[in-house]
Amino acid sequence: MRSANALACLVLLVAVRAGADEPLRIAGAALGPDGVLTRRTADVMGHDGPSHTVLLVVEAPALHGASRISGRVEAFEIDPEAWLELAAVFPDGHREVARTLDASDPAAPLHGTAAPRRFALAVPAGRDGAQPVRLELGVGMLGPGVVSVSELRLETGPAPAAATGRRPWLALAVLVPIVLGAGALLRRVRGSGSRGDPSGVLQPPAAP
Image (cartoon, rainbow, N blue to C red):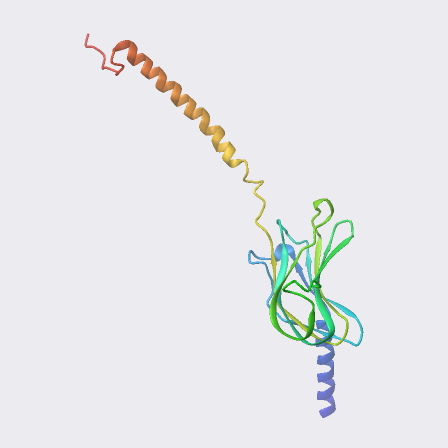
């Protein structure tokens, strides 16, 4: 009985670890207006040598203007260094990568044990303004330790106003003829009044 329970626990542990190695895949069209990607926490464990783990994949992201992926990161016994990176994959297959390797950045490389902090990685720009077809958020590590990532969100700029940009001009195009027509009618009424009465005020027709 004990051996059966131990075997069941071992199978469950292997299944959980195998699932944890798979990145979370999200369709860009499924994101809500708040841009929340996941509320779960992902823990990445480093090994004796360099490693790279992809945590999240966003397929066909709908990006407007400046976009970034933000969240919270925490480090435990990182030796010697770890970092977050965001890769943008473009239609022609090339990749652009942004990493938290700048020591002056709030989301600088991770060392040792660090308290939770916010981070934000800007989506890399494509050639000639091309939009990425996929975003990949990952963790790079040079050695052992644990990196914990949570509260991931895709933040984008405002939607383009091209679809509504013509409406003010359309309203103006409709309004101008109305105003001009009203002005012409007013001048005609004033002119007819000045011919019938020196005062320029319209008078009721005289009785026969």
